[in-house]
Amino acid sequence: MLPGGNAMIGRVLLALALLVPAAPAHAAAPTCDPPVPGRPGYTVADPDCELDGTPFTALPGAQVWTGVRDGAAYRIEKPKRWNGRLVVYAHGYRGNGTTVFVDNPALRAHYIERGFAWAASSYATNGYDVNQGVTDTHALIDVFRQATGRAARKVYITGASMGGHVTGVAIEKYPRTFAGAMPTCGVLGDVELFDYFLDTTVTGAALAGVDVDFPATAEFGTQLGQIVAALGVRSGLTAAGRTWAGVVERRSGGERPGFDAALAYWNAASQGGAPFLFSFYPSLTAGSVDNKHTLYRSTDAWRLSLQEWKLNAEVLRVRRTTTADVPVIAGKPRIPVLSLHGIGDLFVPFSMEQYYARESGGRNFVSRAIRDITHCGFTQPELKQGFDDLVRWVETGHRPTGDAILDRRAVAAATFGCKFTIGVRGGYSPCPA
Image 1 (cartoon, one colour):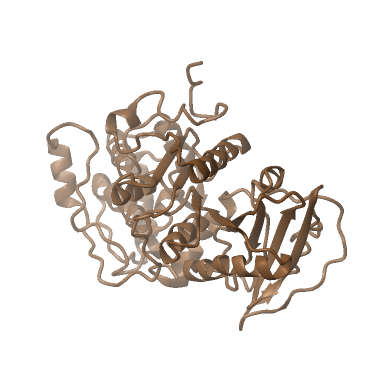
Image 2: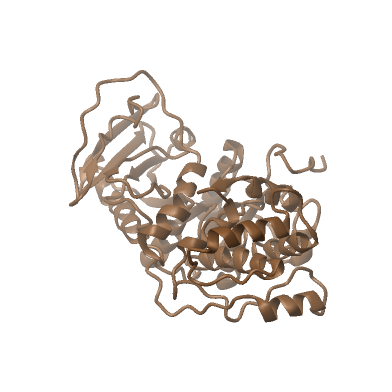
């Protein structure tokens, strides 16, 4: 459970479930079995069917196994020419519903083509239950052995969004189990994500001259209207709004290409009738977030401007007083980790990668920046290249290249993200040929 409980989860992470693209289904609709009882309060959807009724069947040259173990549905697929490697896939947040279901990884076909087997779990529970995700994803290794009669010689782990958080925790909890890891668009900064949600609102309020309370009171709806108008969030940024944009840019990863387009994209999005970046504040709870010592900057000048001094003096300060319910990622991987993150993602921002990079000191960690403004909007070629390079790193010891995500000048360069972005997204100019 996230700091703030289920109310916070429902507001903050339901959007995450909607924004992470699912792997495509295939074939004609069969007759699916109804959900069966799982953990108390849960049912388990038929792992042989997608939610829309299409069947889960083996790809050409492969064999599949499905079932339910300890309240979690699983799927396994192994090519006939198996290379002895297994990829376990950790899915993202799926809301707080009472039915759990399993789906396929985005690189399913690529795994089979390369000789890799894969396995995925529904997890026995829903919600932002990272610990359950770690338990059930790790259990897939034994499920695979029992189902296929073969033990994997090497195991890789991958996961997107909350699944990236699961991945980061799993490789630290089971340091000798996995050979390599590939989190994508992941919450690698764990609780810092919710501090960022605090930042976007309290700085906007201070710059708008609106005194907000924390936790939010019944007056917040009226106050938010005043903040949005003063900043020009929907009508075109005012001078105060441009300062706020500078703060958000630096809190989400620093000056970088495409940020103006990214901010416009996320400002145009709404959740619960509020502009997206302000919509989480009412769900943050006392003691769960912190900005007591945060220094807010809107520029990269050597000295703070008078405006920045004023902002830091007037902004609402909040102190964390409770221990986070989510598992914290130490950032000390013992195995190769290759991660992808969109630099315009302002939901799970690019700064999550930077937290992990600082904690790891770059040891066993390669991060690749993708020029995209959405959440988890990677292309198949980008994902394939990342996975293939991770495998080469694990198998040969040849460390792949990444981006210098902690180098402020490199991040601010107009071509940042060009090295590993394949194709041109909205909000970005084409990269040099």
